[in-house]
Length: 143
Image 1: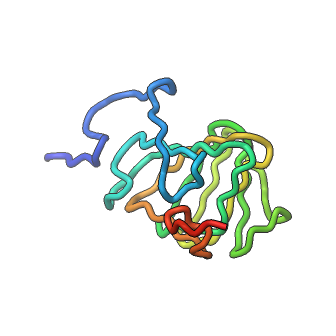
Image 2: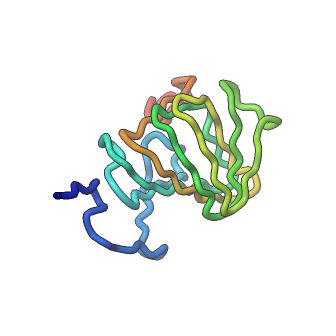
């Protein structure tokens, strides 16, 4: 029987933290970074990415079409659910915590206490839609 592997999973390998390549991502605020660890996030297959958000950065209400599983790698991951950014709704999750976010759930993030890094496991294609198009860095009409 022939086994078909997903992109980036056809051979054994390890990714050391110092080898991670952090890139800007058009849908994120300018200082935020994304690293693709496994797979091709824009394809319909499993992927693993890491997201690094610097202290004080907010990601305004948005949603992803895909179900996501976040693992907090470092810092405190503050996330709130809803269609309006409300600091009172933010909950902080420390390193090692796993957060399950169903697809199409409106939510927002805030790096309130310092930089955080999360690892996201999901099945693509990756999508990100802001509730208010003016909050989307891709629109060029930021507040």
